[in-house]
Every structure is written in structure tokens, then in C-alpha cells.
Image 1 (tube, rainbow, N blue to C red):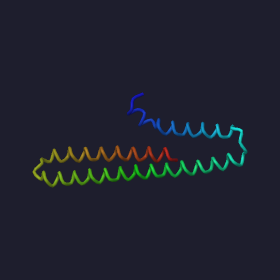
Image 2: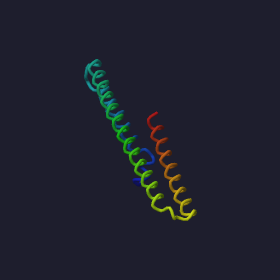
Image 3: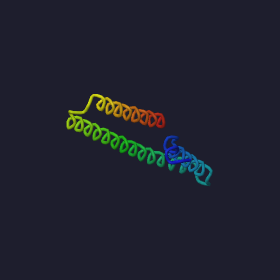
Image 4: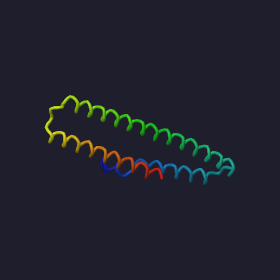
Length: 115
């Protein structure tokens, strides 16, 4: 499986979730008091949840910054190239729309993986 296929298929999410499930089962089956195990699992869940939220927030900020920079660069490019032909402008607009569609697809995938 190539890197692109793995990213699109959510392999990392599956790997992390599988690891967490395995760790949880190991803890539940370990010879400890149930109350102690439940407290540990609750604190572990809080920690993982916090890290996941932080990672998603960082990713969203990175994507937002990227979109802002790309938009600014496209705007600057259009201002500098006022003399572009209509056909060139149409091609640039189509490329920007395609990039926006791809970004929306990734946003939906991220939202679906969270829910």
C-alpha cells in the first residue's frame, strides 16, 4: 500500500484506534483492581482526547494558513498579471476551484473520521 493510499484510507487513524483498543483490552485483562484500572483508563482517555484535539486544532490552523497564503498569492498574481488573456484567467480560476474542492473533500474526510 503506497503512502498516498494509506493517507486517503485513514490507515493512521485505524492504527491508532486499534492500538488503543488493544491497550484497553490488555489493561482490562491485567491482574489489577477494577477500580484502579477504570481510573487509569479514564485518565488515559482524557489524555488521548486532549492530544487528539490539539493535533486536529494544529492541523486545522495549518490548513487555514495554507489557504490564506494560497489565496493571497493568487490575488497578487492576478494583480501583477492584469494583461493575462481571458483564457489564462479561466484556467487559473478552474485550478483554484479544483484546489478548493480537494480541500473540501479533505475537510469532509476529517469530519467523518471524527464522528
